[in-house]
Length: 267
Image (cartoon, rainbow, N blue to C red; front, side, top):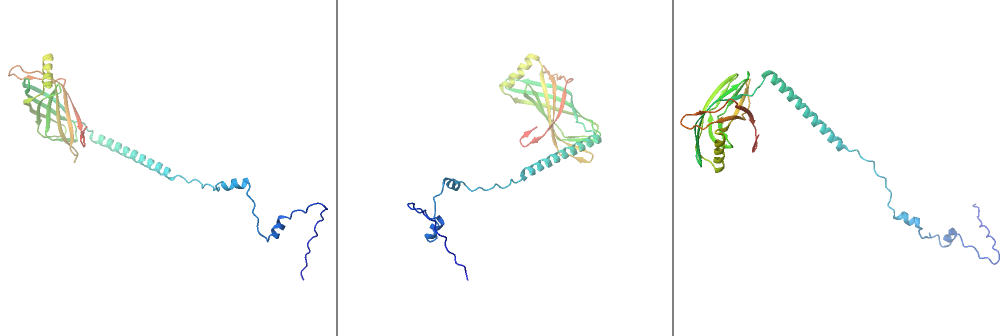
């Protein structure tokens, strides 16, 4: 049998004093057990307006930078390896073949005609060129050679030489005639030539030889490469009669340069 619980006796209230307000729990029980709501204070309102704190995720490692560094290192090593291999191959080729450029020189040059009028030029030259191949194991195969004579930046004659083979340790003598038959010139070109003849009684001459050459090393042949031979330091004297005059060729220097064409440009 369950024990009975008796409520405690109410505390005595002195005469003339109001009875105390019932406790919240008692008031809630008296109202049928419903929860009472109270207005929020300032601290609760401030915390409600603040966003919820969420911790940041740990930073991820940057793999892209490491990949770029590896690629740059690989490319650098590859380029260095190619350069070293090319240098070793060039050194071996030099030791085995000792390559040298062919040389050209102007042996003789005669001026048999040089008639300059107010609008035209008629000229005729006899040219002898000597080509030397100093290599013991390398041969050259030349295409037809185009020749141009220039004086005071004016073209005063054109000619050509036939194709020929330049064997090892060989010297070849080439002869041709360079002429200009009644070529029309502008006023500035005519005045330049006349002023040179009047002041120095001789004309400075530059000879250009343009062609393509194929090189044979042992049993291997390369593709054709353009070259230009430029000879400067020549002085010609205009003949006064039918007797040809000889040009001064003692100080002539001929230089051989490669002519590499890339698209529209020639170097």
